[in-house]
Amino acid sequence: MRETSPTRGAGISDQLLEGILRGSRPHLARAISLVEDGAGEAVRLLSHVYKRRRMASVVGVTGSPGVGKSTIVNGLVGEFRSLGRSVGVIAVDPTSPFSGGAILGDRVRLRTHTTDDMVYWRSLATRGHLGGLSRHTGDVIALMDAYGFDEIVVETVGAGQSEVDIMKYAETVVVVLAPNLGDDVQAIKAGILEIGDVFCLNKADLPGAERTRRDIEMMLNLREESGWRPPIVMTQAHTGEGLSELVNAVNSHREYLVSSGLLEQKARQSHLAILNEYLSLLTVEKVLESAQVDGSLERALKDLSSGNSDPLTCASELVKRHLT
Image 1 (tube, one colour):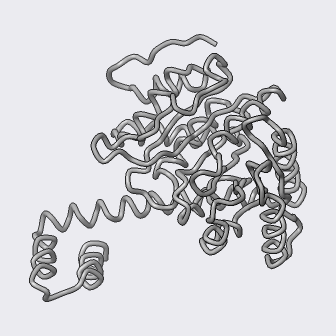
Image 2 (image 1 turned 90 degrees about the vertical axis):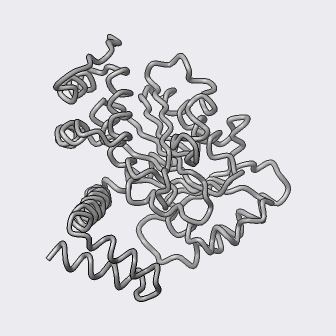
């Protein structure tokens, strides 16, 4: 794989696209940065990238802080590589209030795959976006897909209460839990058990692991029946125990999606999520830009400050004025 750096100047989106399609790592890295920064060339680049997706397998890994998600992801990468699969990893991190970038960054997670050119690890900052993901998650998945990775793994930020967005982008969601962390009930309340296709009970060597497994089984019995019964895989990620079984469960779920015809439905769900993101973004930008020009934004702010109106009424009036 020839590693050439993208050239600066006009037509950078065309250069980046060409580099991505021929498997240039520097071009992929530059393209992701371009998309994150919201540069004008990113729109042109993405308009071509989405037409060149190869439909890689997308696996989401989510769960509360402290359960060992990053170690599980690192182990999954190793298992996929042992099967000869190339892997792109998107690790969504909290945003630094100072730099606006990801707090943890790529190097914290990279342990055993730093010299493997078939693995690419990229951190994304949430930048205030809710749902445990970055607003650009779907776009970066598309870039990695066009690049040609066989597997794309997305690790959510681990906020504990707002992780359900991952099911919009991943065809298989792995929910990672651990015994004795005191957040089992919180995870259930947050609805995180409702989105899992595979459950990974990590740190299975700790006391209470079997009780937690039974609790998960009990909750799964309350779920609406479907053609897929989510398996519970016991792992000790720090030793590698159970990781091959976890990959087998992920692969089995994909086979189920293909055989049942649900894979196409998952793809449609992902497309809808990305479309909603852009509709929301473009709508807000249009309203704010137009409202600034005619002064209606300033009037709305004054009404809010004086207590003469409320945010919902002001927003409704601005939308009615500038979108109808």
